[in-house]
Amino acid sequence: MAAIGDFESRPHLAVAVSGGADSMALCHLARDWAALRGGRVTALTVDHGLRPSAAAEAARVGEWMQALGVDHHVLGWTGAKPQTGIQQAARQARYRLLSEWCREAAVLHLLLAHHRCDQAETVLNRLLRASGTTGLSGMAGIVETGAVRLLRPLLDCSPAHLRAFLLQRRVAWLEDPSNQDHRFARARLRAAGAALAADGVTTEALLALAAKTAVARVAMGEAAIALIAAACRFHPAGFVRLDREIWSAAPASVAMAAMARLLVTVGGGDYPPPTDQLLALAAALASGKHSATLSRCRIIAATDGFWLFRERRGLPPERPLAAEGEDTWDGRFRLICRPSVRLSRFGLRVRPYRESDSRILRAATESTHFDAVPHLARITMPILCDEGGPALAPLLGYVRPGYSDFRGILVQTIWSPRHGIAEPGCFQSPASSHIIEEAIGDTI
Image (cartoon, rainbow, N blue to C red; front, side, top):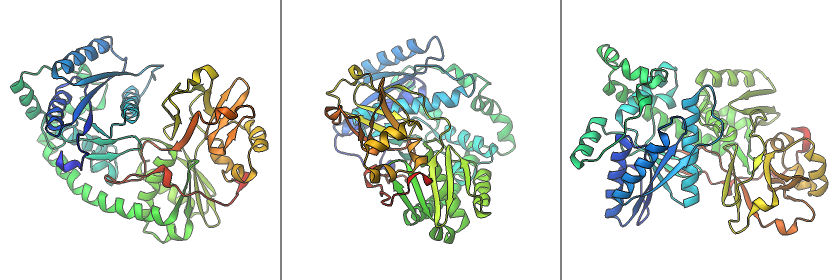
């Protein structure tokens, strides 16, 4: 734990516990570590609802946690499930549920049980997908997100040692049947492990590749962040402006790494685009192309720079606003509501801005405030509405007449993407975003 950063006194750690051997070992180790420092652990189990036995397994984990003296919460993934890409969708839902719980509970650290073999499989999978430096460096031990620090303290541990630890303590665990399901890439790679090792593709070789690549990744990351700090201005409405002169003076590799970070930040996605797509984007912009799209973002060339906006495609459908606390929208914005007010009685819903909203909001909002947010940013921002239309547009300072007492219900709408531009140990604070002061209206 000392290798993954400082902790507050009496730390409160959240641990993702599926019930498998790795996460059970992590929970026991984390509980012991926290107890020595006067802290505590909360175990979080995600029920994806994908197997009939999932609910019973989550309940079994709860029994084990109760016997261990650890608080336990089951987080359910509800709603429709996709027909394709189910593992990726489940992973995204899992991280979202875990992060949201940590944010609401004010827990700073979320521990994940990935070990050295998981790391090797990750590197191999990314190698087969022709990933660049970032991908081949494997999973980071520390990942700073807008909600919580993701910590992987077991990356140097083998699964055999973790199971030996559990056997020594006489701790039971569950076996996940999906680990043997050859429909999934990781299961196929594990099955091919012996054949790959015979050709030198061993766990040790893959970890050595990750370690060497990580050195280059860190150096490139520092250069990319320095370029972003010098060339970019961030707007709380979720868009970025790049200075062309500063950007063009940077080495192409650094500019490409910086662009990858910006696209994830503005698009609210989970992963940067592949290297070949970044190269194609750079070539298109260098050739004078005015507009391009990539990673849920729209990149617009201007005389003195570039603008990055969230693309309108794939925005969340209209849905009820969370009754209290915090609500995450599109992986980019946090809607922070006063918990003392029951919003459900107002029938508020959250949806993307519509073109028809412009007439209403422009007439009721100070023009300097309205026009300071470009059209391409407005059409991808969240609007709170009811049966009468827009009720609140926090990023534009709009409150419907007659709702003056309603103003205090929604405290803030904060641009806080799932994955920001920061390296481990740094945090991109939404409060420090630079506001673009000039009015640029509907031309963009």
